[in-house]
Amino acid sequence: MNHWLIAPIVLPAIMAPILLMAARHDIVLARIFSIASVLALLGIALALTTLVSDGLIVTYALGNWLPPFGIVLVADRLSVLMLLLTAGLALAVLLFAVDGSDHQGRHFHALFQFQLMGINGAFLTGDFFNLFVFFEVLLIASYGLMVHGGGATRTRAGVQYVAINLVGSTLFLIAVGMIYSVAGTLNMADLAIRVPHIAAGDQALLQTGALLLLLVFCIKAALVPVHFWLPGTYANAPAAVAALFAIMTKVGAYCVIRLYILAFGADAGVASWLAAPWLLPAALVTLTLGMLGVLAARRLSQLASFAVIGSMGMLLIAIALFTPAALSAALYYLLHSTLAGAVLFLIADLISRQRPGHDDRLTVAPRFAQLSLLAGAFFVAAIAATGMPPLSGFIGKLLILDAARSSVAPVLIWSLILGTSLLAIIGFGRAGSTLFWKSTGEAGEFPAADQRQTLSLVAIGLLLAGTIGLTLFAGPLTAYLDATAEQIFATHHYIAAVLGNTALQGGIR
Amino acid sequence: MEFLLSSAIGLLTAGGVYLILRARTYPVVLGLSLLSYATNLFLFATGRLVLDQPPVISTLATGYTDPLPQALVLTAIVISFGMTAVIVVMALRSYLENGSDHVDAPAPDEALP
Image 1: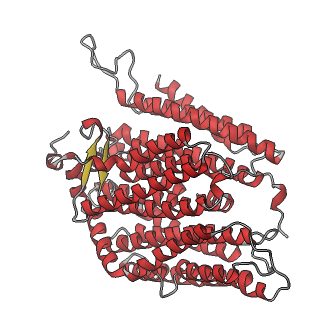
Image 2 (image 1 turned 180 degrees about the vertical axis):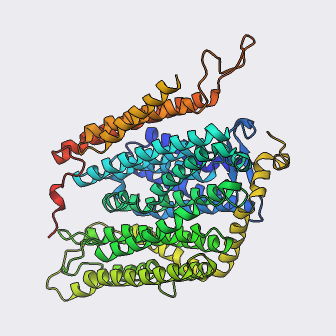
Image 3 (image 1 turned 135 degrees about the vertical axis):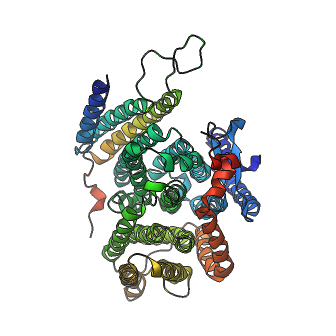
């Protein structure tokens, strides 16, 4: 039993109350603690990566109550990859927030730590009900972060965000109840063993429950038709929070990958590949709507929100193909789209700060102080987000296109992906030329902002460096992701790691 | 008993969904509460309906009820209680800042140029 496995949950869970109690009046102390905690999380994630990189699946039974009765944490390549991504993104976002926006409201850092605790827990947990609990932890923290700083528009968007997520939580509970009522277990590995043996009369309940659960994950992943909460939330949240939320949509995608390959995958008998016929059409519509939204956006943060929706569509297309090659491509695109989505919100916020009165609306306005620097950053981010060569978006898109060649509807998928890429390029190009090029011809100039923004620029630089790193090391990375995808599809390894080898032969009944 | 419980869950859900679709925050909050009550009852039912049986091991017991849904319901009650408090506070603040409790009220600073 490796106790480091629970550290990504325990560390922020301890750090948040410390921040609440010891550092509530001292913002400098809070910043130091918060950054130290995220750095430690990054270190732990790296250590866990070396632990699982040779294909080992590590489990941790809480209180030594053995599964399927106790709560279990499971770390395989996929979970640890997500932990690493979370910690990396959190570091960049925190650096951005430390540069000023964290003291616009209270308790930013404590909520930030709770949010990380929920996200890490959701990636590590091995049973549904615990997944529900960690979803609630990350949601409660996100409610606080969402309205951080206040303001009428933000609060109104916050209420809508809370309401939709409460409905989502209710559906989650109903789905968990349905699955439990016929399968009699909450452990994912145990469920995977039991699903093929569910009686024909109970299949309706089981499949309804599983599809309700899919709906809940799709709400988190902002898939059409349950995507409508995302633009309002992300565009109105503080930039640092919106950038962190880029990982929240991926929590939904992660759960789809985990559950619908493990428990409702190839070995599930009647219920095998339950999610595929629903997921693929929804993902295709999501991609189209998201990129149309990019074209129609009137503010840069709105454009970034719709780009996130579009990228979720692309990601879930790759997931919905349910082949190892497509999943490997999906994981690459997941890494890329998280970084590219997050950096767009940060750039939009810096632009908005320097154009008082115009904010980040796509209007022609006088020049502002850091025009050329931010234009350069936006250019790189836009190339990555739209999937133009040479950056990581292009490689991700190419991998997905390649994996879609042998799918059910290759022509449809290819034409939609390529067509929406064009829409995205036009949308981003229009936004960039309005904000930067047309504005250079205007008379006058916005006064330079009085606050220093070094750390914000460092944060943006880190995220852009991440995208460039994904491009440069695409070779070894895709090899690793191929291995990850194969591990996910070899579900018997996961089940054996959680329940022991006897379970597979029907030992536990 | 089966009919009583299932019709209660159905009525609570129907009422909850109706109220959630209202345009003002107060009915929405009430609707969410009703929906969470329906969910709690539903979770109880997932352990099958059993009368007068203990959930934990006892020498006098003739049979047992499933203890797990009860644990789930407890967790769900705590979480939904906390969440209701959060949304009440946020709805109140939204009302005070926007001057309207309409969930879609246009904010004064949202007018585009």
